[in-house]
Image (tube, rainbow, N blue to C red; front, side, top):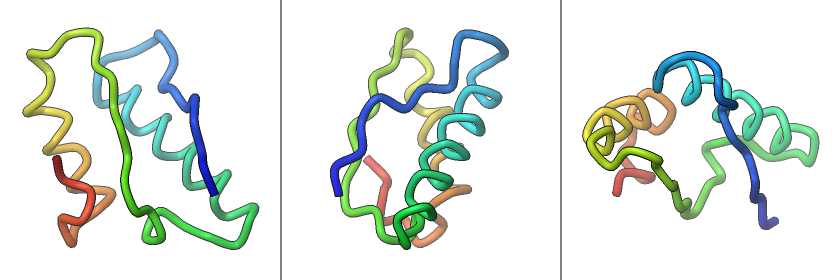
Length: 70
């Protein structure tokens, strides 16, 4: 399955947007019988590249095995 276009919206800080985006992704995957654990790869676009390290930290919460780390 190819999933695209999930965002965390414009409200809140980076962590709030990250949490919302991953919630929406997980919800969509669960509707099709999958989960975040089935994710093979992902591409993330940041408005402010200075948030890259913080995003990596947040992503580790969703992928503790490190598979989705950049």
